[in-house]
Amino acid sequence: MSRFLRSSEGSVVKIKAEKKGLGSLKTVVTALLILAQIAILFVLYFELAQIFKWYLLVSLLLSCLCCIYTLSSSRSPSSKAVWIFIILFFFYIGHILFILSDEKIFFHRSKKRYKKVFARAEKYGDGKEDSIPEDKRCAEDCAYLKNAGGFKSYGGSQMKYFSSGGLLFDDVLKQAERAEQFIFLEFFIIADGKLFEKFFKILAEKASRGVTVKIIYDDMGSHRWLSFKNKLRLKKSGIQLMSFNRLIPVIDVGLNYRDHRKIVVIDGKTAYTGGANLADEYTNDKRMHGYWKDGGVRIQGAAVDGFSKIFLRQWEFLTRRQVDYNSFFYKFENKQNNAVCIPFASGLDYDVPLGKEIYLNIMAKAQDRLYIMTPYFVPDDAIFNMLANKAVSGVDVRIILPEVPDKATVYKVTINNARRLSEYGVKIYLMKDSFVHSKILLADYCSVIGSINIDMRSFYQQFESALYTDDRSVLNDVEADFEKTFKECRGLSERENTPLNRVVAGILNIVSPLM
View 1 (cartoon, rainbow, N blue to C red):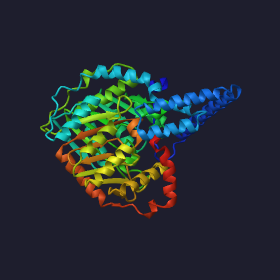
View 2 (tube, rainbow, N blue to C red):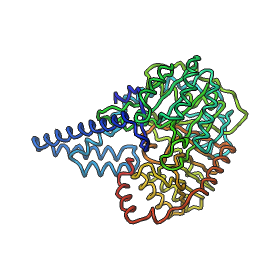
View 3 (cartoon, rainbow, N blue to C red):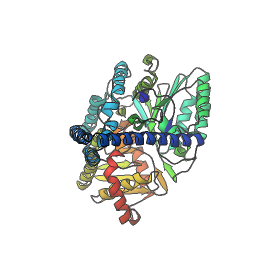
View 4 (cartoon, rainbow, N blue to C red):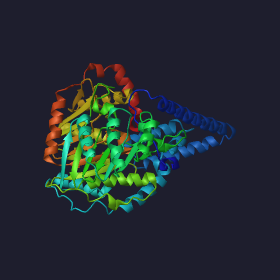
């Protein structure tokens, strides 16, 4: 995990895009070198097993111990079942695969460093009293986010929802042009293109005037799309650039942990989060999977400090240098609004899967409606059963998914899960000729807008960001976007329900908890 700790440059997402020569070559070479290392380990292991016959008994014993450890762990039930199957069926090497994947072993040092960073930042960004919601259900959610993750429920903030990536980034660029003190950007993907050039022009000019500009990008998500040339341009312009979890050709379970957050903070007065990355497909300047449906939310007022804290803690972790937090907090202009606004994050830096749990909390308390937009739908049993029970109980449960997939295997599992839910009365919508990338949960009393997909990677293996709010104007705008999008969708049809698709999805479902 030491490689994970020394993050420096890069980022990748599993989305088709135009080929980038060096980036594609790096991906292929890295994959081949890792596969070669795995092959060497397996050969050595089997040679050892042949020489020392008793080692088979040791392997079986270790596999059984791993199964016991798995059953007593906090993994999801479906994930436990898959791992026990792998460990016992491949008992020669199953325990090795399990140990190599265990975050408690390989993320232990990182966890300790995160705790130190969190302790240093704890007192910042909490200058205003918590907002107290009238709805008891919302109050329970606020208490959960505060107790489980330390996330404050801010009042004195205004929010604006954007129903597309284009609208979102148009607003971000306008606000960035007004920056006078600092700009923070954190994205899973930053890619060369028209949007990058618009940002670079503003950021370089601001940096030349003494504005502090800090950028975090995920190396797995961006390394094929963000060229070395543009990285140099950013650095030479005085912009501070850090990559999360640098992609290296070495067997390292930490390569599976990605920074999937989308955060922008400008002068401590304005912040943004949502589903859109900094790349042309998110504004539809480049078409890869039909129309790209995305969105996000702008926050102004006291709650901006919440996103500043999330960003700066990640920055301190990556740089290994203490941040002067005093320079970046309490810059906001207080807004006359008592609505709850909670910037929050989830990831391996927390002890519980906050994204999954807050989703479950909201789903459990929804009384009238439960609308969801997500590109991937690979829930565990808890979320699947909750949605099914809500629909059977008469709650209006609707899920919007893409008609055009970006990952064929995940899409088959997504559609199969959606088809199964539809049997309980959940209404499934496929947005025609489009890839839906928005990650939104809308209940009758609140909404969550951010980067959290409904799949096991988002819940357990990725660092995510989101906004929780009960602001009625935001809820109305999100509802209007859902209603408009419903009209642009179709339902499930026989093309998604062929026997072959069901068989393939059934096989893929076996490993879906690991997707």
